[in-house]
Amino acid sequence: MDGDLLVRRYYDALDDHEYETLEGILDPAFVQRRPDRTFDGREAFVEFMREERPNPDTSHELDAVVVGDEGDQVAARGRVLEGETELFEFADFFETANGSIVRLDTYSR
Image 1: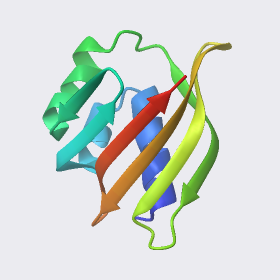
Image 2: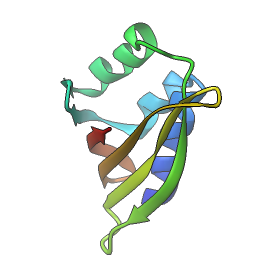
Image 3: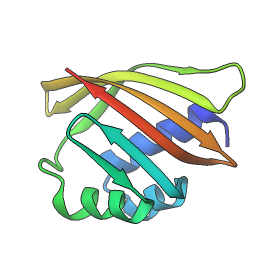
Image 4: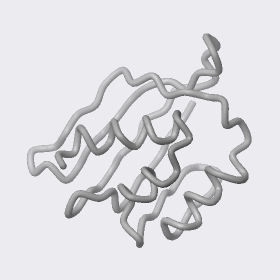
């Protein structure tokens, strides 16, 4: 699966609460680093999204998805919305390998 499609599937799985799909596209050694915390391992991340996510009723509106020359680096920029209300903007930087997301660095404002 190409990087663009993989990243778009990631956001769709989060927004639609499709946690089995989310687990299927994340590498077992997946790591997410963001300003407030780090998730080491796919299970920790999926469990947080399923059980502890502060606001599960949000959606991601993507403004841009850019795939690097090698295809294994993908950047996405967008906004997190609750209904029509914008909560914050984000920039996500993904590393992929073998059709899975291996790493995600998230920045927000």
